[in-house]
Length: 231
Length: 119
Image 1 (cartoon, rainbow over the protein chains, first blue to last red):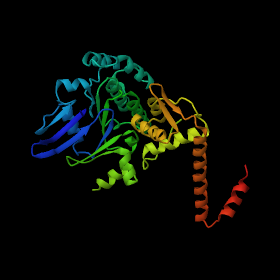
Image 2: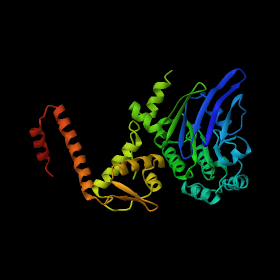
Image 3: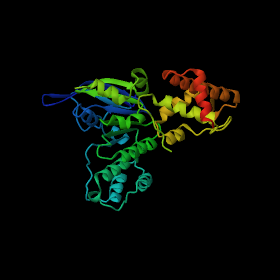
Image 4: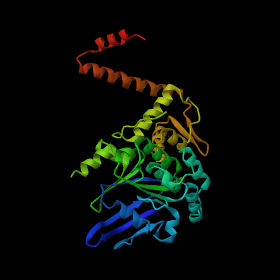
């Protein structure tokens, strides 16, 4: 059984079609890049998988069951925009996560924050954007989830921190769990991907194993993306 | 240490190169126990699946073997590692001569350059 299966999924906002008849299958144990330009439909797709939007047509199955309360327990989601109360201290956010998610590993989160030189007694509002993004990533990666969904996790951070974030993702996702990372910063991230999904104007135009694609096209995923998405 | 990967070439092929050099240079010797897939993936900072693929290739080449439940080991067949080294050296030498040929130098002359470099 697939960890995630998306069948004939369509979603529109008013008359604008955001996703047009999407079909995707993702197995356990894979890191998948969801790659597309701004406005391609990446965030809409992610919100649908997280049951934050309702599809017009089609269905989304996680471990064979329709998304809902059960799937939320096993999906760790890093949204593009923060939803945390910035007046909270990091240590308070940790408590909040511990209460909210049964699979949250508080000790692991503390250790990761320490590794990143983040002070757990600091208020979020006094942290830089990059620091806040690190905190949020730690929160998400400290859950023992089956599926991690990271929407633009590298957006606001400098290249050195990007590497650190990628390493954090690599060394912390549970064995047999899968990770979906949405981004348009492909060259930074492609070395850690098993599979790629190209999404354009609401349609999946390619799903492939990353190394096979490099082998076939003799170029990087970034370059292939640029070729296929030429305006 | 940081490993640099060229995104134009499949990552597992580049990992395979690193691993071969470890075997040739004796970083891992005949019969040595190897780090686990996860440990290797952490060292190279790559995806464990990609690491597994590279190690799988080495295993297909009989350069390493898996002892069930115990982990992976370097082959005890030293001849095999010596052959790997020879093949690698020949490839490097060939590429040197090819480069020299491109600038109009034959084998004899190319060897002269090598000698002049000395140690």
